[in-house]
Amino acid sequence: MSPARMWRPLTGLLLAQGSALTANRILLVALPWLVLTSTGSPAATGLIATCQVVPFVVVQALSGPLLDRVNARAVSVAGDLASAAAIAILTVPGNPPMWMLCLIAVVIGTADGPATAAKAVLVPAATAATGQPLERGTGLTTAVERAATAAGPALAGLLISTHGVQATLRLAATLLALAALTAVVIPARRRRAAAGAGYLRELREGANFLHGDLSLRAIVAMIVASNFIDQAFLTVLLPVWARDHGLGAELVGLAISAFATASVGTALLSAWIGNRLPRRYTYLIGFTISGVSRLVVLACGAPATVVLSVFAVAGLGSGLVNPIISAYTYERIPVALHGRVNTLITAWAWSGIPFGGLAGAAMLSAAGLTTSLWCCSAAYLVAVLRPGWRVQWHTQRSRAPAPAPAAVPEPASV
Image (cartoon, helix red, strand yellow):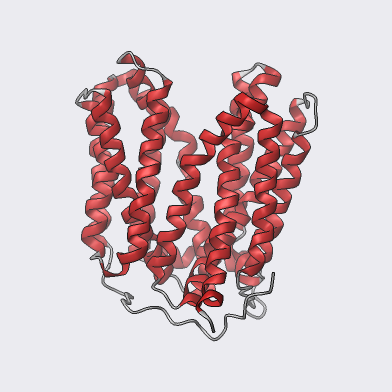
């Protein structure tokens, strides 16, 4: 097989992920703005976010057996097309009623959950088809995700200010349709469920495997804790710090963009040499830099230029370590359980996010800003250090390029 044909599945997956993730990041800005301008109610804006996030988490957790039973590529295409159709309804001129906005947000979250999970399940097969180490695929997908995170919100803000929210939503719908079309080059990965196995039984099998693997449990606990702290930090503590130091929302946006942009470079570096790095020490150094440093620099009251520099360095650590974590989790999970276990991991990772902001506000009221930042720094450090020694990093590690499995079919023609 020619090199171009070998790389086509992974290239198609990266393009599909990039298009879908950029559309989702655009929605993070465009959908709340549409609700705020049409209703004038901050409460309604928060309700829309809940209507989108809750179905995303719940349906993704329940979709695992579906991804293990059927063609994951078809699930990705169907989810992206459903999201695009729902967004297209919002581009019709006029102010839709609140019930319709809530219903469309529910549809988008319901469709996006399985579609996002399906693309994640396809990463090992698409990477194996290239004959490259798994870290190469996870590094490239991480780089795509961070690039979409850096570009999507900025693009949404620019388009809303110049062309209006409807034009921005049309772009999001177009990108999701493009993601569905691009996905046709990804290997289908058809699977067959065990004879007589029921859907609930398959869900339990995935949950039992995750519960029984101590290394995966340690990593999931770390992700839940770090996401919870990050949400409190990004939604409450960082904006309050910027306000108290006479700075505006632009500092918050610049800090987050610096973090995401810097992480793209080290994610690409991890795709190149990640399979040769010592996982335990890369994890410890990368996560300590990416998480704890951002909190400490604010707690020390550093000037804005130093804060932005530390956020950029933190992004370097995050981009380096996340592909290694992803590759490790793929290796720990049997191929037949990829859908069920990966969707449960993602659902757990999101489980604390809705409450992080509330916890940050409560901590701020009880202890003040500086104490809250130091407490979050200590909690983040504990959460990161625990898996450093509990995880069996040396197991199931292959430094050689992964061979393409015979079960992977030839990619469909465009």
